[in-house]
Length: 610
Image (cartoon, rainbow, N blue to C red; front, top):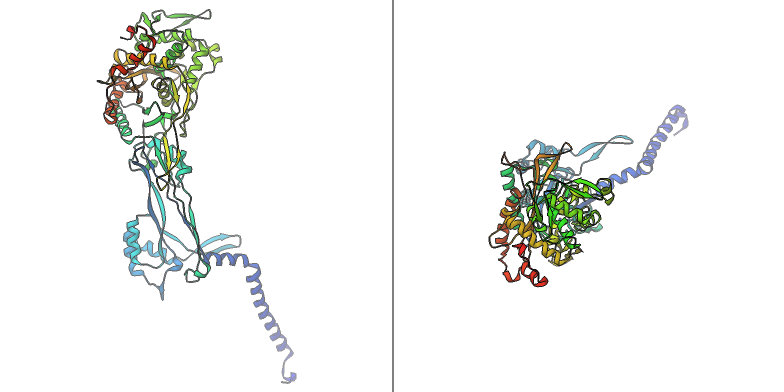
């Protein structure tokens, strides 16, 4: 064709158009392969790769007989992949099945259909708003396996469930403060759940696959998978039956006295194993969020109070162990003052007027003045050292979170305030937890040895083999065996003829000590609000069980003071009687009693023990 018939303008215009078209194509290729390459590769990877987390099942918590206290049940998080849904024209292929699916899930049919049809969502990015494909829409986070099976039978394309686990506590409130709980986001809170989380939690696995544009797995690329390792079983020292007895006794105390709080601890003195630990107020770990925050606290470990007359066990045992006094030594408990280092100090008052009392009677009648006289004779340095040796002023080593160390004043405070030497022997001026008071009593029951308390017996794998064994541990010897035997006889007198006659059992010898502490209200000791305590053990000849009961502010309804010998000793008798029958504890042969052994060992006349 001759150029004479082609307009230069048309030729130039066509050239420009062709160049611009090719330029646009090349620009688009550059934009896709260079500028947007990282983003598009991420989109492809997102559409091509599928990653699933395979959850590990948390290990069970059982009592010492294997009864389940905490376990894990299987649930399914059910959802739909809108990209995998099949369509026939503009209609869902499985639309007719959606009402049945909605009925099984308890959801409106319209909401279920919207989850199927909503395939994209808007997300903000550095380049503005983008449309991102939706690969998973949750229909229900908690579906029972039986319901999941019915949904699977519907064979709705794109609907599937991811297995997950939920923590369950079959006993409800039973041993709640020992067990702790799992929060809704899967974080262990308090108790064994937190302390033994390393063993309980297991290790999650994962599964990664690749799929094509139709969301079919590409077998040629293989499947990468790491199986989960389930958690181990934790076996406690808790005895479910004894725990139930303790909690029933707590319920009885709450019903009768409407107190602010109650704590009951039961243990085996020779091993340090905690057999039961119950508190009021309490909660249900299955629905912990429905209870006030204060209910979640383990009062046995966290709350501190002045132990009152139960501390006289420490004072008397220390003085006997140091040879400062003998059981038959007497003190004039009618005198209101005492001279200490040239200073006349006022002695505390007694509930009843007393005259001259032996050391045995001071303990049996719980004389404040008598205890002060013994403490002064022992001296502040030794009194404080023995208090620390009995476990006051430090955590017990039990291993549960939230334990308080209490308050045991340094020796210099005795010099700054000399009145402390007359008040500490009777249990004032020192703050303790219920577990510390309990541990002090176990020293006497265990022939002078302090055992480290523990609540976990062993860790067990899926085959039943022991992975970790927690063995009894002796902390230290606090008093001699002879001193413990002497204290044992004196504490038997407390129950037989002293302040704790309501704790007595027929045919079974009980030893123990009461305590009644005035609560501090607005900075002053109150005459209307008390903490009632009894800590004792049985049988006294061969102690198998130590029980401590603490009742905070019992309402006596105008029937007098809430003495430990009335409120707590009576409750001790109730739970001790049930425990004796359950454990099959038999009356001891008098020939093997602690009294007979002590007479044989010392050859002394012990008529003062009556």
